[in-house]
Image (tube, rainbow, N blue to C red; front, side, top):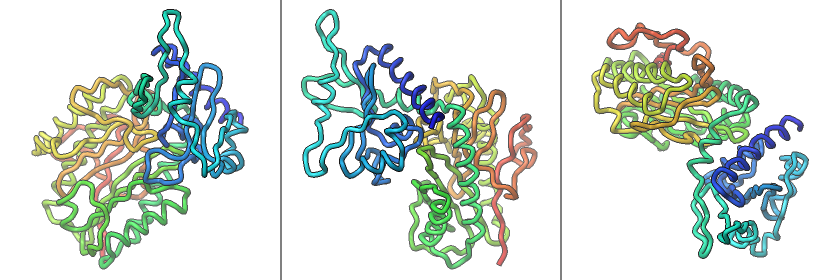
Length: 389
């Protein structure tokens, strides 16, 4: 419990420093990801498909409280231990209107010496007549991305377990299974490890080349499968993708997978403290050009900095955000029919892959197109897992 108290205290101070910096009277957190971050990974959500749940956090210069219903309050206190970790719970009957956000924030507004009220801030846009509410969405996402050492340990554990779930799923694949059956295997492997598969994408055969975000269908696996997982536990999210082929893959599939591995290698090699996301994006563009696909970056984003969302923010052209030790990134270069994705931890000097699968076939940098020279400490990229029936 002391560890959670220390973690929460550190994050509350970050928010209060932000209040001082921006001249805010209070900060309201409504996003599930923000609530997991500020509570040390507590499960405040119910509907996993929603970005907002039945709990809100209000942080002021002097106090911090959670607002919810009488349905949620007992579980939050008894199983998530939020009262013991320093939160005051304020609950409303489920059948009565909750305390209005507008009234709540107006109560917190602080007059200044010159008369106007100091506005509150919120991690989602709020339109409240007669009250300015500062949108802090982008700022809070960047706070969430700066993982404390205890969060980095959780991310390492989560990455290893997501890798194990992916490995078990891919080793269970058989021709004749539907994409939906494969997704069910992935869900089972994740959930049995306490992980929510908040994104599970599956494509087989020609669907891999048609769609970058292939929701699973009834289509039956013949030869080629792509399996994608974004797994969440204690609020943190890591992502990985793996490719499986029954029998030797055609040359075109092999060529494209090698090309995205080249791009992934370039992005991971660049993921060191001080570099900007825009510079990493440019490395990706250069690598696509080396591989013979100079315009491929236009067709899909290349990933970004992760944390309590699968991507807290994306790598964009000229992106100014600089990486710092302790952040996690998930790059996902892709081409029609090919994708390479893992989640890495930015180290003091070198990146470390969190979702490495022991025993999975790897492409050494010297095997990648155009004789790209490897950089020290960069882990080779996953190859296609070839299976035989």
